[in-house]
Amino acid sequence: MALLRLSSRCTGISRPLSAAFSRFISTDTTPITIETSLPFTAHLCDPPSRSVESSSQELLTFFRTMALMRRMEIAADSLYKAKLIRGFCHLYDGQEAVAIGMEAAITKKDAIITAYRDHCIFLGRGGSLHEVFSELMGREDGCSKGKGGSMHFYKKESSFYGGHGIVGAQVPLGCGIAFAQKYTKDEAVTFALYGDGAANQGQLFEALNISALWDLPAILVCENNHYGMGTAEWRAAKSPSYYKRGDYVPGLKVDGMDAFAVKQACKFAKEHALKNGPIILEMDTYRYHGHSMSDPGSTYRTRDEISGVRQERDPIERIKKLVLSHDLATEKELKDMEKEIRKEVDDAIAKAKVNITVILLLAYSTFTNG
Image 1 (cartoon, rainbow, N blue to C red):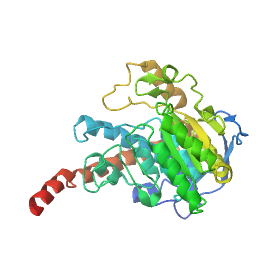
Image 2: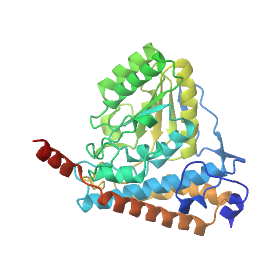
Image 3: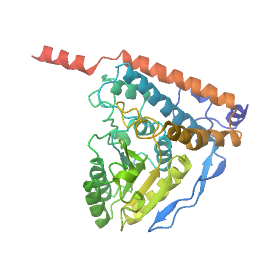
Image 4: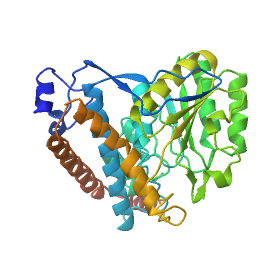
C-alpha cells in the first residue's frame, strides 16, 4: 500500500498525532514540486513563482488537517442545531486552504489575528479539538475558559490573538502587534485577517497608512469569500480588487482555494514585510455555510453556485487529487483516515460534554464567596 511504502522510508511524524493517525503520516521529505492552480496577480511588486516545493509528508498532513477542520465545523453545525452551542457561530468550511497554507509558511513567532470565523485558525496554531468544543459549549477547558465562545478563540503561547467580534477592529490591533515586533526586533510578522465585508472599514485604511509610514511587518489578509453577510461584494465595493486597495502598498491576489498558492504567497509576503513593510494578500475563497448559523446561505446565492464551487474548486479535493496522483495513498487509505477523523471529533465532543460549564462555575463561585 502506498502509505505503508512511505512509512517504511521514515522514522517519525512531523507533529504529535494520535496513535491511530501515526500510521498514515509519513516524514518522507523527498522534494515534490507543485504548480499553483492559477498565476498570482500582483500590484506594485513582482509575483512569486508558481512552482512550490513540498514533500509527501506535507501533502498528507495538509489532507489530514484540512479534513479534520472540515469535520470539526460540520460537527459544530450539528451541535448548534442541538442547542449545545449558543450565541453566535460562524463556520469556516470551504476556506480551509487559507488556514493550512498560511501556517505552512510561517512559525509560531509570527502572529495571527482574525475576526470571528476563527475555529480553524486556532486549530492550525496548535489548538486541540477538546479546547475547541469546550469553548463552543461554554466549558471550563475551552481555550478562553468557556467565556469567549465561538467568536473569541485565543492562544497567546502560539501568537494567536483572536477571535474578534467587531467587524474590522482586529486589523488596527494586528498592526499594533506588528509595531511591537519591529520595536523589539523580533524578526517576525503579523497576519491580520479580515473579510471582504470588512474591507471597506475606515479603520483598516488608517491602520494601513501608519503601518506603511513606519514600515511595520504587517500583512493584511483579505479572505474574500465574496459575500459580506448576505451582500455580494459587487454591491458593497466600487472596486472589489482588494489587493489593490492599499494604493501605495503592494498587493497580491491569490487563489485561496489552493493551499500551495496560499503557502507560496504567505512565504513571499513574510519576506517582503520584514524588509519593506506592509503588503496586502487577497485570498479568493468561498464559504459553504451561511454567514452565521441564522443564515441559511441560500437566499442571496443559488444552490447551483455553491455546488459548482464544491465540484470545481474544493480545497480538500485538490489536495486529495495530488496525494493520489503522486501515489502517496490509495482511495481506501484516505477513506480510512477520514473515518478515524470522524472518531477523533466524536471523542472530543464526548469529552467536552462532561466538562463543567462555566455558568455553573460562576454560580458556585457567587454562592461560596457571597
